[in-house]
Length: 253
Image (cartoon, rainbow, N blue to C red; front, side):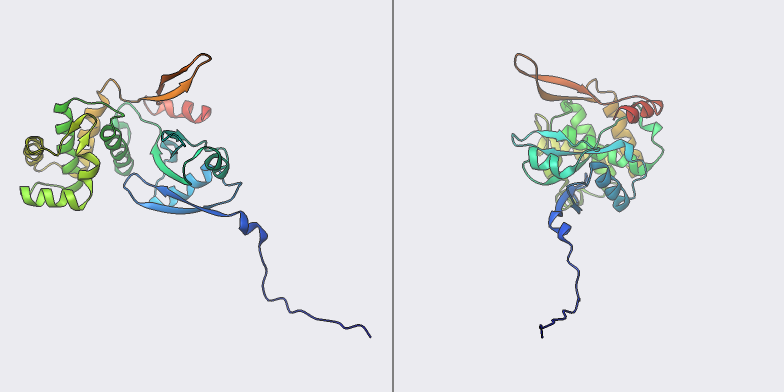
């Protein structure tokens, strides 16, 4: 008589789980969100996930960038697979949430949270030299940044302590070609900051954005491209305009 074996089914194994990978998504306020992707997960899926985590309603302002093998930032195509793009082009499986669309005047952004994301993105662009500014404007922007982060000036010691503890100094002490960590510039920054007494943190962000939008290079980004003959620096323009421009941006994105 043949032996009959009965196996009790207690677990189900999902073979597709082997295709899942965890990537890191860094936000503009230096927090990190982990996100699990499959080969079919698109950039749009990741953007919706991050938007839910951060309570972002207007996702059309945002996208992702990643570092490629030569150390340059590349934009992620939201309609394509995240994993395939990162496997092929990225140095590591990590994304950075990035403001991709800037409008002409921050008054047209009624949401204070979105204005803050704009501020964080532009502060980073200035710090990295992607948006060149004069020394005078760099000092002024730093004063606005301190008011936006910490509120009203208390005293020099408290200001410098808060500045170090919040890691703001490491990001903004060197702005483009200027090292603002020297005593002379720090004194000028703190003096400007102390004279912003009574300005709300949201208004400080608005003033920061208002200064930036008058910069002739606002909304312009250079990147390395290849023509038929040689590699050259090309200029790319963010979509800039009033909210009516958003529809055109979405149509062609």
